[in-house]
Length: 137
Image 1 (cartoon, one colour):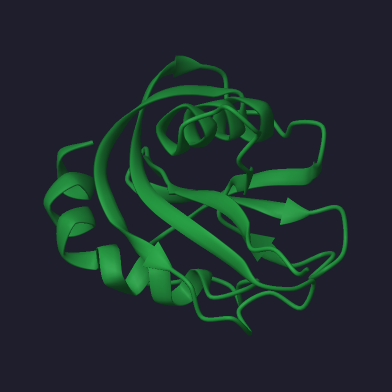
Image 2 (cartoon, helix red, strand yellow):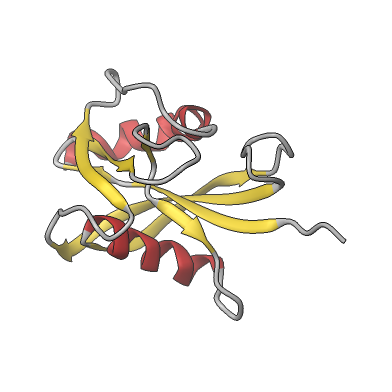
């Protein structure tokens, strides 16, 4: 029996830009991506996204808003991965690459690099809420 894997992704506005990580592992090794990862058994998506943000970027955050659920079966070459994407606001910590991120970088919303998976779509879907936040940060 094949299973669906539940994942989370975070769009983090930081110092007027968006936080991205450079992937250390396949798929999309070397590409920039939103911080995120697989939800652990017994963990809520809300706890998972905050855990992944801290593990990959060093940032402690709080969830601002749900962006959406991304369930296109072909969105990840490893199989059927469903991702719940949130905007997460930083509340502390120090920006630094974590264990499975090659580097962490900040990019302006209007000048993003080519991104892994469907992360460009996630950011586009969040653009209206981000435009309300970014100038204030």
